[in-house]
Amino acid sequence: MSKIDWANLSFSYIKTDYNVRSYFKDGQWSDLEETTSEELTMHMAATGVHYGQQSFEGLKAFKGKDGKVRIFRMEENAKRLQNSADGILMQPVPTELFNKAVVRAVELNLDYVPPYESGAALYIRPLLFGSGPKVGVSPADEYTFVVFVTPVGPYFKEGFKPTKQMISREFDRAAPQGTGHLKVGGNYAASMRAGKIAHEGGYSSVLYLDSKEKKYIDEAGPANFFAIKGNKYITPLSHSILPSITNMSLIQLAKDMGLEVERRKVELEELSEFDEVGACGTAAVISPIGQVDDVDNNKSYCFGDPNIAGEISTKLYNKLRGIQYGDEPDNHGWVTIL
Ligand code: PLP
Ligand code: COI
Picture 1 (spheres, rainbow, N blue to C red):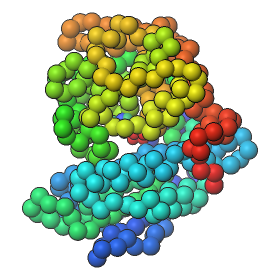
Picture 2 (picture 1 turned 90 degrees about the horizontal axis):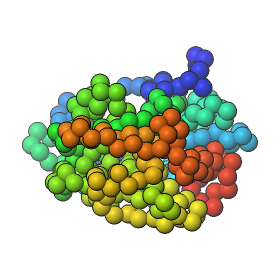
Picture 3 (picture 1 turned 120 degrees about the vertical axis):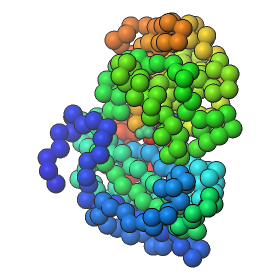
Picture 4 (picture 1 turned 30 degrees about the horizontal axis):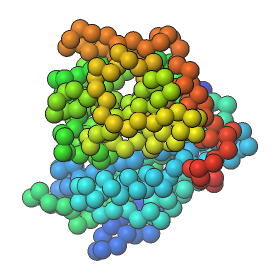
């Protein structure tokens, strides 16, 4: 293993020692296979590569001050992968197999879990795809499930510093009755062109509006959206956004802190009334948003000090990270300690 600069990791792929795999064939999942190979072999007519019959997950493992490794809300990722599988007619991965694969992938790569002081984490990437051949558009008979891990730093290079996001009306990430609520690769392919335009304009991400009316806020390219208004935590309710496990956790932490939680349609115009806004997700953690530019209308919405995260976002961030690293009690049973 070459030396890793833990404190300066970005969100990118670093080779680790092992990954684990299971194959669905003839009506059953195989025993977990442990491999050092980074390659996958599949049929050239696999539905995963032709018709996007594919889903992935993202969760993290953290090393605490006590040296123990904690995996955050693994069961929720298992459920979401099953939901994504159901949505695009893939064979679901049983929770027991999912959990076993995630734990094993971490155990086999313990040297890659970043040290507590670095503030980095081990990103866990489960992947499920149709690996059996079809030429007509129909679900595969065979599926491949892989879990690999890679140590990561912040998704947005600014980390816990406010960034700017851009509203895009030109591109939709997901259709109103489409697959936005599933974690399927097609949603991300659909977001790449808009994402590139945003990055070239100096924005950390696109902030998508609902694709039907372009009136309500949906979510950012790789993360959910939340806002703080007085004593309220407000987050969009929409069929075309991914049910974020981080957001679900922040909703609970906000309630624990005595905030009122509103999950509802959030109008774009409401941005002018919010005290703090942010993006949240496994990769993004909380990424405070300092400014949203509605470039089509030449309008900017600004939130607080452009260089410092807001007070409530900071409290939520510290609480969440505290639980993940084992510095705060895990009152809701979110953490699996290895
Ligand atoms: N929204 C999108 C589009 C995402 O890709 C992610 C990342 O997984 C999230 C939201 C955040 O979800 P979670 O908090 O479960 O990681
Ligand atoms: C995550 O937060 O886990 C994600 O999957 C976001 C991004 C890397 C697509």
